Image (tube, rainbow, N blue to C red):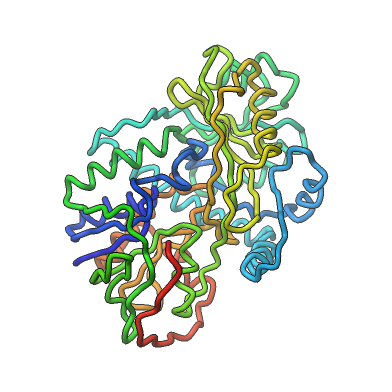
Length: 433
């Protein structure tokens, strides 16, 4: 089958690789000049199979009110007259219950753990290198209240068989020795030892080369205008270079996926949540993290990537904007210098990306009501973490095979299971992606 994958971020590249392995003729379309040049370019560097939780959680509405008055808030809301933003926020709030949190986290952990196995196999079969480390994630709690609140995450990890360890202050320092310099600033932590770290940009570029060796064609600097849909089936993709025929289309356009799908009556509840990162050189290795330290207070990850430190996090709901706010940089600098003093933040590069978030935290992986049209998008802050597993799932679905894991609850049908299928009998021009 000829399969068009829309988007060459980490999700699109991993999908293309798995589809090619399954024997399909694959072409990847992207407006950028190469792979992973948008949201996947300078993310936090985490592959967090264990530290995998929905943003929508019990207590978040109350915390959000407090964050409004915080100088270094992990969540920033810039309200505007935007029905998509309002609808997404309402849906997110409806998921902030204990029952919904448990269900959503279970779905995310199921896919993340599958990705852990898939990534290990992929690494073995390709031999690609990307500044990878396999030393886990330490979720660091500055207050006893945070440590106590982690009980709900511990319960979910235990229920799904995910390895974890609750650490006191001294155990955190044994795991991350540089924290001895600031031992008075935290009370304990939650270690997920199977988590990994690395440079997502390097990973995506290396894997794209392996995909090309399998026959995948990458069409860069290509603007996607719309889809060719007739008789309830997708027949191709419209680009600035003309129409591309395809037997199946996989949409992995991140935050822009809903804009492509809306004319076809597919209401994908994905909204851009902007994240920020700093990348700075390691000045003193003994005062730097060994792996990833997740600063729970500010929701910021501090990760070692070779001879660099990547500091990434925050969630800014402000629409499709990519400006670099000075206040956001100050928050990143505060977190890393507070826990690992001595870093040269003056030499850091500053970046932002639009994470495609669903209101329940779980990505959307599966078919749509249009035959041949599939979605692999909405991974939020965990795109790289879930990429290899969701790529296998989407490859199996496109190929008509049963997935190795239970894929229920991953498709868009979970939002509107009773939605009627409408027929769209024309070629719909769209905005350019």
